[in-house]
Image (cartoon, rainbow over all chains, first blue to last red; front, side, top):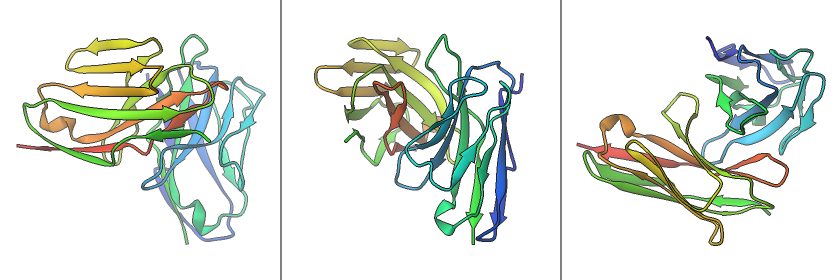
Length: 112
Length: 109
């Protein structure tokens, strides 16, 4: 199985533009998460979804939005990108029977 | 506030043993995780502790003391491929993971 896939692998984006980072999992996991990882900092939770149709805010939600229309997909949208959103973005998922989170390969985003 | 502390960087020799410490202060505790992350790659799950004591998994072991807010990851018989960052994360009372900044482990021949 593919596990979790993310697209694109990397992207350079002009400030003020919008962008959607895609995340798809084929493990039928209930919960999905979006993190950002910046040098010298731990992973920080942006948004999460415990089940299809529900979403919640994490530690750093401002400037980002998510939707969870079905179990498999959890896109992250930047409505108007700013340079401080330059980061590596990881999507993760977990099953309700265990707390372990499994990560996608990441998207490296540069906002200029 | 919530805080996870681990050393920024450690160096060890191939074939040796290294212990990576993690201390935490969180609102509630529902388990502690260790992940391995090679440069440019995603974090991958290594171990999970929810009760005090040592969990052994091959060359890797993880220890937890809830009363001390302390954990360590022990890596034995180090190999060059173990060069990576090791991330400590605690699941808080809201079942959210709080992450440390990671420890970069450098293995020298």
